[in-house]
Amino acid sequence: MASPPPPPPLTGAACDPAASIAILEIANLLSVPMALSAVIRLGVPAAIWRSGDNKPLSAAEILPSSTDPSLLQRLLRLLSSYNIFQEHISDTGTRRYSLTSLGQTLVGDASYAHYVLQHHQDALVRAWPKLHDAVLDPTGPDPFRRANGGVPAYEYYGTDPEANGLMLRAMKGVSEPFMERLLEGYQSGFDGVETLVDVGGSSGTCLEMIMKRVPSVRAGVNFDLPDVVAAAPEIPGVTHIGGDMFKSIPSGDAIFMKWILMTWTNSECAAILKKCYEALPNGGKLIACEPVLPEETDCSSRTRALLENDIFVMTIYRTQGRGRTEEEFRQLGLEAGFTGFKAIYLDPFYTVLEFLK
Ligand SMILES: C[S@@+](CC[C@H](N)C(=O)[O-])C[C@H]1O[C@@H](n2cnc3c(N)ncnc32)[C@H](O)[C@@H]1O
Ligand SMILES: O=C(O)c1cccnc1
Image (cartoon, helix red, strand yellow):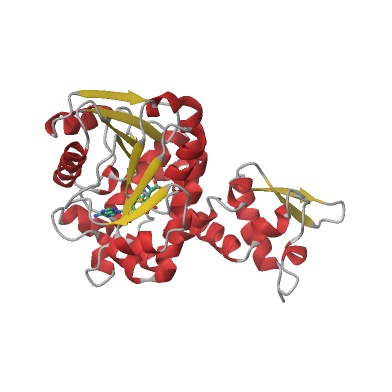
């Protein structure tokens, strides 16, 4: 009896070992942020850092209560391959871990750790398997709403005190390093401003930092959703006002906003910009700090961080919310009535966009 024919040989890309290993790496990429969230939940970065000690520790030393430290060690090995921890192997083969400069962004009061946790809480993670639905049904509900009983993300934070608190801490942690860079390179942008309104200002951290460094700004108005400002801390000189930016925005000499336009559709952005225009005096300006997408696609960390954030917004906030190019922002501003526009690049992630009335 004739034997069955052999399977056809693998051809093309599947045969290329570099392509095979690269696709296997991407297929399991989710294990990286999930391992990162796990070590943050376990308090690992703080245990190693200990007020700047950063002494290399083994998994058993980090988590003495563990009956099987090899599990934590596996997480630490993976994260060392992403340069979050540095692995030190002793002569006897014990593996110990310290924090690299990247790992050190996860320690301290205002660290990026809260942002990592915010992005990997259950309600957000549930949305990701529905991403393809957004592509198939671009005008339907965003993946977050599909996965969470029709409730949009900002409403979900408002109804869950833990999620609300996490969002406030996450925004503060990401804002502080950026605001330092903004205040280094753009202090003069606040010249002549006495009353500054932060639209969608979350905890008020951005206003607090501006007011500490720019004495001419004597009154800060932190404007956000009522549930958000109710949980915001008291800040000298800052009045927290709860409201809806689609209905009206408090007036001031200038308006500041950060990471707002990105989460909304073009028509929602047009409505927000119109409300800002109405709240400003002639000659007043809106200072918006938003991720601006590059025209070209490349493999740099910057481009990847911006494009990943673009897909995050598509999944969690609005299918048609998105990162925009400088030109798209200029057009949105012109359509809302602003006569001047300038983009200032002083941070790899956020671009300062000045809209002049
Ligand atoms: C991505 S966060 C940015 C927070 C802060 N600007 C920062 O960069 O740290 C967006 C903020 O917009 C607020 N927001 C959402 N919808 C709003 C609305 N309709 N009116 C006012 N604020 C709103 C959210 O509560 C949230 O604090
Ligand atoms: O909620 C977030 O973390 C967020 C909001 C806007 C853009 N990117 C992230």
